[in-house]
Each structure stands twice: as C-alpha cells, then as structure tokens.
Length: 223
Image: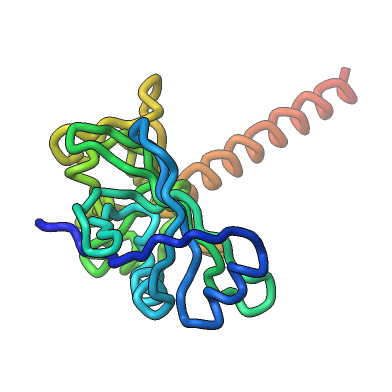
C-alpha cells in the first residue's frame, strides 16, 4: 500500500519568533533528519497533521514527505511536541527511512471477538498486561496493530507472545522470554471455578486440621 503524502515547504528562518509566525499562518514547524543527510527545516499544514494525529497511529505510520514539490522521501514521525494547555501540535520531528531500513516502534494491541470468549461472557474482564508491543519492523511493512483473537478463552486463560503471528520480517525487541500480553481475569467479587475449588480444598484441610488438633487436645487431657 502506498504511503500517504505530506506536503511540506522549506523554511529559512529559525527561532521562537519565526515558529510563532508560522503557526499563525496555519502551519507547523518541523524537521526532517537521518539517512546521513543534512537536517531540513520545513513547515507542514496544521489541519493535515491534525487529521493524521486523530488516527491514533501517527507515530507508527510511514509517510512520503514532499518538500516544495520535489522528490518524495519516506519518513517516520519520531516526536511531536504539544502545547501544554491547548494540546495542539507545536513541532514535529520526521526521521528519513531507506526502503530497506528497519525501525523499532511501539505497536498497539487490539483484541478481537470478545463476544466469543466464554470467560468474558461469564463476567470476566480483559487484564491487558501490555497495551503496546515494541517490535523491530521493516520500514516498508510497519504493522498498524497486533490483533489478538479471544475466541474460546476461559476465565484464568492467558495470551502470551508466542500465541500471536507476526507479519513477515517483524521481530520482537524482547526475545529472551515468552511474556504475557493479557489474561482473562475474574472481576472483584467473582471467583472462577478453579478458585472456588481451591478455596473449598483449603477450607476442608483447615477443618481436618482443626479436628486433629481437638482430638489431640482431648487425648492429652485424658492422659
């Protein structure tokens, strides 16, 4: 799939005063760096960037940036500075990427088929241990999300990293253990059958111990 295009313009002035003037014109200051090339100071359209930010995947999506109508370069947004009060974007850093480059990014986790999970239908909840997974991905094949199918999962079941299938060429940054991504947990006040069995067993063992102690005490008194 072709990357979305971000149209940009070169800027010749830097500094806070220049940046404020750029924002008043409905544009955002930004830079493009990396790939052993000079840093390019640019401006981008505020409305266009706001629409991309609203997708929720801006920092994990590659784009083709076109400066002054010239040759397109593939980039990945690496940092966005926001206004502390309005939360509007103030400045963006774009990283240049070669076609064969790999990049470490945080990819969000999406859960599918919640209605097909007996544990969730029975009142359980998804305890998401990780909402994002850090992956090493080809620049030309960045996954938008990792999808996890919850079909058939019961209370107490867990989803581990080994349970998911990654796109071709994508590898985990954490590769020395099979970490947990989520579990189907019982909500507060609701115990699973296994927990009830364990509680009943513990209660029975406690009663047996109490009887044994009482019998021993009686025998001691008789002696």
